Structures are given as structure tokens and as C-alpha cells.
Amino acid sequence: MDSTITRTEITALPGSQRQQLELPASAASQLLKLRPGQRLLVQVSQGCLWLTRDGHLDDIFLPRGAQLQLQQAGNYRLGAFGPADAAVITSAL
Image 1 (cartoon, rainbow, N blue to C red):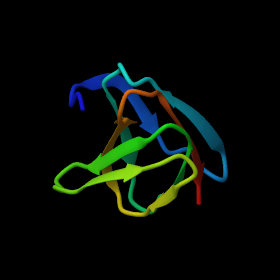
Image 2 (cartoon, one colour; image 1 turned 45 degrees about the horizontal axis):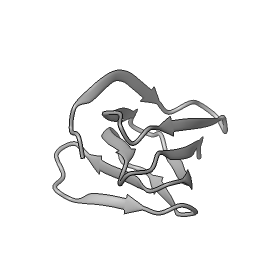
Image 3 (tube, one colour; image 1 turned 135 degrees about the horizontal axis):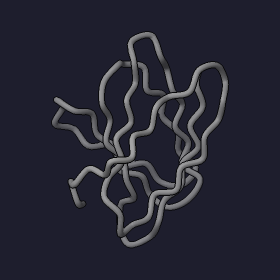
Image 4 (cartoon, rainbow, N blue to C red; image 1 turned 180 degrees about the horizontal axis):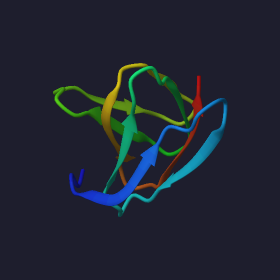
């Protein structure tokens, strides 16, 4: 996994707005900032998602159809894992 961070930042949207994110396999990971009090649902709609949180050693891998609630403020890095592109839908909770 390329650990280079692109300049693109994904910010959790207020309310129940949904966002579709395309994560090309050949691209660097993306930065997602979650502020205190925000919660975000991440659903994998295509490919396999790699996700980690700054300051934590654990990586998370989610296959298509899986979802994860992010509830702790911080910087998260995410990208496609493997040879295929990934796509996720994020929804504020």
C-alpha cells in the first residue's frame, strides 16, 4: 500500500449527507478528518478498502458490502487495497 498522502482531504459532512468516494488502486491514500462529536458510517460499495487511524498500529481491511462506524475524532487514511479500485459511501450519523 502506498502511504503517500494526496492533497485531497475528505471531511465528514454535517447531517445525514452522503458522499461517494472513488479510490483508484493506483492512487495514494486519502486523508479523512473526523472532528470531535462527529460519527461517520463507511460502506464499501466496490473493491476492498484499507483504513487506518493516525497514531494507531492496526490496519482495517473491509471487503465489498462491509461497513464500519467511525466514532473517534482523528485523522484516518483510506485507500483501495489490492489490484482493484475501491469505492465507498460515507454517511454522517
